Image (cartoon, rainbow, N blue to C red):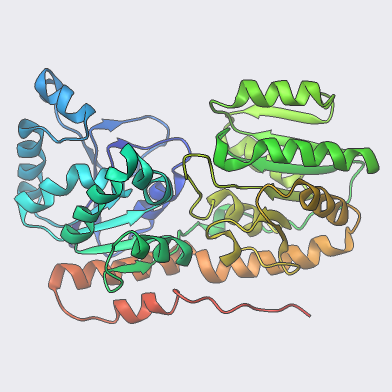
Length: 395
């Protein structure tokens, strides 16, 4: 079984379940993760290598602060690649790939890079655009680039990535973890959003739209699951809008509790926007998970989201920052429980077709084979089938 090294500087952040799911789903390649820092956010089912703490002292610490891999750490990672007979490096996030690219060069390994979101949209704007020029060096040196949506693929090409080098491979989720439970009417109508409290999540727009909807429609409640730097501002907006009894802030909670909240939810909402610094979503995994459970979704025409959420088929889409349209969509869906199951079934079918972890992992493993052997396999053709997604209609 070939050995493939999965790389990320911090393994893993609390919202990076998609990366953990990807590694666990590999069947024909032995996964080994490598990172400067390993968190305890997940129960990892695969080995993770991390440099000895002594290598992070002194000059090495200062170099890594500037996203430069120090000599001692480069030597350590390179020797690990050789001693463990690694055949390919798969780095998650383009920013981390810039940091680890010297390891691939030193160990003479093919380098596969997956862009996920901020690395494609926010990072290139930093340092007066110099970060974008820095990113182009990665486009030249990487063997293959993966984007999680067609929108991101075209954006990377606009940044200078050769079109023949970048391909769309969508994030996969384990559908077995999400029981199909179309919503049923209850004494209240629950709207849920699972998101970090950051500008690109559009939570300020959501609270204002929800306030307007409650004026015309009593019996609505909003659950905001997550936390982040904007929480004080969100709490103040909720207080100023007199919504303390209608809006519940759960903070970070275990996945089992998130699942329980979603099982009692009628509408899932994700009003993502382009942040002032240019940061955008890829396609939020939380939207995939809500659709897998059979929930209708209200979201925005933002980044790759319209590639998943279909207007009036699996839910409703509005323009970014269009609070009036967001409020109208809430009212329309809240007052149309006959749509919930129909849209929920279409949502489950959609996410099964585009984001099933087994199918997506098989595509990536074909690509691993191609890159490690240098042969022209069927991987490119298989991946190409998913680059253009035809719209389906529900009668």
